[in-house]
Length: 221
Image 1 (cartoon, rainbow, N blue to C red):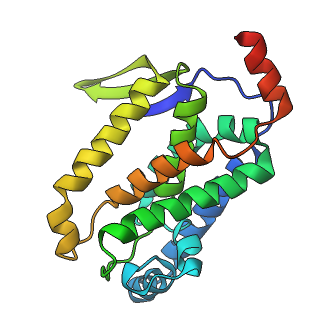
Image 2: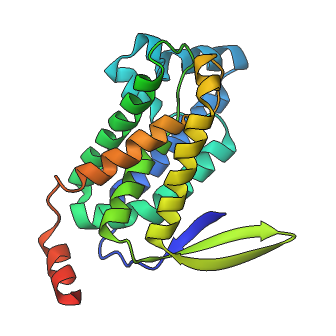
């Protein structure tokens, strides 16, 4: 099941959300332009390898992806949830918030296995932070989900249900994959998702929202 739309209206253009999507797509197209050996070296240098943790790699790894499905899934989640958080923070603060969530995600994965030599790439940790903030600010928004079982169907659920289900899935999948982590096998960086989500929930309380958002909220309440 994947989210494709939310009911929460945005009152400004999500310029940074669009910019982030564009940068991720361009970075992936550059990856595809490389031959397989050069691409592996590129990922090893600019992906985040916990064993040689550095802050530059934390930043660059957020814009790299392992395949089309990895990229498209992440960008869909960013588009559904990112515009509303950018709307309430403003573009500049949203960019800082997004990057800090990515840092929280990287630290979360690093703490689980600091000796890993497997490069970590993807925007999903930072996007998880956006999702955590969305759950805090818009828990009762309706999320349109698409699923498939013989045929494709759609349905709406409250945001808090969708996001708590997603977090629970990451949590239990992460602890279920501990053996893969300790064995230096690749796979989904579940603890980056967990770290990013928790970072987003915490950081959104520290970022002052726009006055017009607070006014709209007070009028609705």
